[in-house]
Structures are given as structure tokens and as C-alpha cells.
Image 1 (tube, one colour):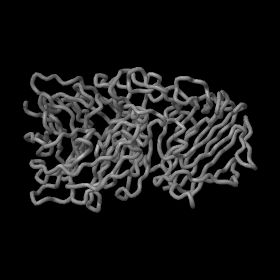
Image 2 (image 1 turned 120 degrees about the vertical axis):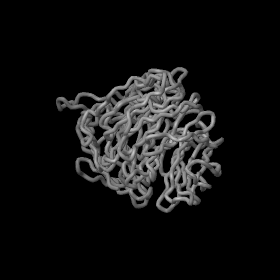
Image 3 (image 1 turned 30 degrees about the vertical axis):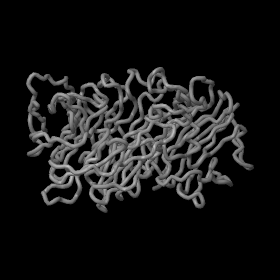
Length: 584
């Protein structure tokens, strides 16, 4: 193997003989770093794979390979690097040669030494680590397992072993699930595997027993692991013996199907999770692309109490082609908002690289994106929209009934559409109805809008039934369902139904061509006997509250508007604005 060369923040870039680095370019934030709050787009990453790390002095590095393969391959690892906390970037700098036949990588910074550890595959699993404050790489070590950024992870535990090192625990793929290995001598010797961690098959879905394992050591000393699978939730298990064995896996609190999860303890001690809090389209027959109907939104939440409660559940990124008929311009093995990785800087900015596309697309991808936001954004308790941003913070698509050609994708078309406001110049309203479309799964319009999660809270909206209206509803739910998928109403916490005649109850009937302010106030989301949702129309509380249909321990974070018209409804109803207030 050629000598491995690393470009540290303290030294000039070294180029391996006969290798010309890819063209570099500078990327800068469109604002000052201190002004970043809500997610801001940075640039398009070159690959689906790679690892994102922050060094103790603050440099942020995205390490990746550019060769063919779903997550990258080839001897050379490149880096997109920022030395100022994410404000400016230098792209595709040659960093390291790991030898011909290498593929994948998973990199982490040892929280005790500050050195970088890199696991990858070249025939067998391999491990490299830096020395002397990341100025040089040491000798390569063989691993008894394979790991890459999508199928494995590794952490260091608090307790220092007699060898002078902190125990390393790696969670990696195995036949039928996930296992762990551990090392007490800095990765020279590994013990394992542990018992197999897996979930059962979900009838009618792609069989994915466990994957993308993520671990954190809890304050109690237990290790907590989350894995993706075919079920409706990420699954969890625990280790009481520092990674030697694991408890029986079970569903966790986090909804999510077929998509990776990233879970980390950030430098100030909080836990941060990033995953796809979404469900696949209901009603599909058994085949292998359910996951391509559930990869349009990426979410994040933070915990201050070691995972007992979570704040946020906010959309960090939405797929840029979620409304497009041609969902992917380049046929790919997989495409969407999946494959996220994140790091947190010393300024409490979260940098996220996410999205999948064809290997050859590179930085022309319509699905991959790098973003930055402030951790404080997850703590917001309110949100408002009057649609002045267009569809940027909305999902309104309808999915095709069948996959697009021979690909894994489903075409999309706009459902709910933005129109000029009927009485206010330069403003827009959202219209929902039912227009015949024989190639979509459901031609009833729908719209989804995310807000900070609340165990208690309120949702206020202005609506107008148009002459000829044939039915609609407003529902409150804790995850993302495709906008026109009526499975979202079946799973919702609260549903406010508006029948075709506008009759809400004995005392209240909504007339057509008149604006109404509808306010929904929920008192809780756990117990149907004590929790309910009060309904106010133009400030008047209605006699009957909405009953809690399904519990949601972490609260509500989505409102869904949908037409329920049983036949063509070109009139439908209008939505002028939406405002949320959430309580933890």
C-alpha cells in the first residue's frame, strides 16, 4: 500500500505522487455564520457516502470516496473541509490513500484523545488512526468485521481500561441483523461477536431485520442502540455489560421505516438524533420499493435528559424533487433524502450532509444537499406560514399508483396548489379539492406542514369553503405520511372533519365563500380518558371536543389538510394561513 497522507489543518496539502486532485472550489455561506438559525443550504455533496467530523480545534471535515459504488469506492479519500465552523468550504481536497480495492468508510473523533479513527473495507475490515494531534496516520490494523457509514458505527465508553485506553465498541452488520465487537487496547484486539440483534419481518414489506446501528453510552452506564428495519419504528436494545451482549430488541419511540438513523452525544452532553420520521405509502402490495415512498423529509430532535424526553421533531430538509413527475433525472439504485450524517461545531451549529443519487451524478445531484442550522432552532415553540415562501415548507404531492418504468421510484404531481388570494393582492392561498387523475394512488388533494412538536399546543388556521365543496378535514399527527395518503388520518391523534354540508355540530355550520378561523387546542397526546382537543371557530368554543384517536408520547408535529370528496371537487376549500404553538 502507498504511504497514507493526511491533510491536517496545521500543514499544507500533500499530494500523492502521480495523483492529481480533483478541482477545488470555494463555497461560502450566503450570510454570516452567527446569523444562521433555521437550516441554510450550503452545497451539493459529491457522494451518498462519507463521514462528517469536527476536530477539537473546530475544523469540520467530510471524508469521502468518489469511485463507483453506492457509497463510494477507490483508494483515495477526499475531503470537503471548513476551518471556520462551516462558513466557508474548500472542496475535494485529496486527503488519504487507503490502497487499491478500498471502499466505504466510517470516521469518528476519539473524544478523549482528539485523534481521528477511520474504519473501512479492503478485502477485510481495516482501521487507521491519527497521532500527534492529527498530523500523521499510524499503521493500518485489520478488523474481524466490516463497517461503513451506513451499516455500522463505533463509540468509546467513559471508563478507562487497565491498558490506559477507553473501551471501543463497534456495531456492525451480520447475517440476519447486527452484532457488536469491543476492544480494550485501542483497536489492536477485538472480542465478539455479541448476540444477534434483529427485528422480525413485516409482512408485505422488504425484509430488513436491522441496519444502520447507532449507539450512545447513557449516564447510567448502559449502551443504547437504535437500528433501522422493516417495522413502523426504529428498534432499540441495551447493553448492561459494556457491549458484550444486548437485551431483546423492541420498538423504540421513534417512527421510521427503511431509513438510516444518526444518534450522537454532542459535546455539551445533550443527545441529538436525525432520522426520517415518516411512514411509507399505505396499500402497496409486496415488492421492494416501499422505502422510496417514505424518503422525502429528514427530521431532528434533541434530548437534555439522556433520552427520556425529546424536543423538536422538525423537518431539517425536504427532498428537492418531492413534487416532480420525473422524481430522479438519473436512474439510480436509490434516490431521496436518506443517508444523512451530521456533526455539531463548537458554536452549536449543526452541519448535515444528506441525500442519495446515482454514483456518477456527483455535485449535479438533485437529491443530495449539505445544510447548516443552529441547535436553538430545535427549541422554537411556534411556527407560522402564509405561503409567501411558496411550496418550500410544504409537501403537497400525490404519488403515482405504480413505479415509474423499471426504476424504484414513484412519479409525483402537485395535489394542493397555491392560488392568488381572492381578496388580498400579492398574497396566496392553498386550494384543496379533487381533480380526476387516473395514474395516481389517490386523487384527493392533501398537504402536510411540520411544526415544533408539542405534547400540548394549538393549531390555528384560516379556511374558506368554496361553493360546491364536497368535504375535507384537518388532522394532527406525530409523523409524516404522504399528503394524499388517507393512512395519515387513520394514524392521526386528532381529526377535525368538515362534511360537504359544512355542518360541524348541531349549533355550527360553516357557510361557503366565507373565511373562518379554526383553532384546535390539544391538552395532551397520551391518554384518551383525560386528553382531548378543543375546537374554536371564530373564537367560539364548540360544545364537543375531538377525541384522542392514537397516543403519541412525544406530542404532535404535523398538520394535514386533505380533501375527502367522494367524487370530483374542483371547488374544494382554501387555506390562508397556519400558526402553531407547542408546549413540551
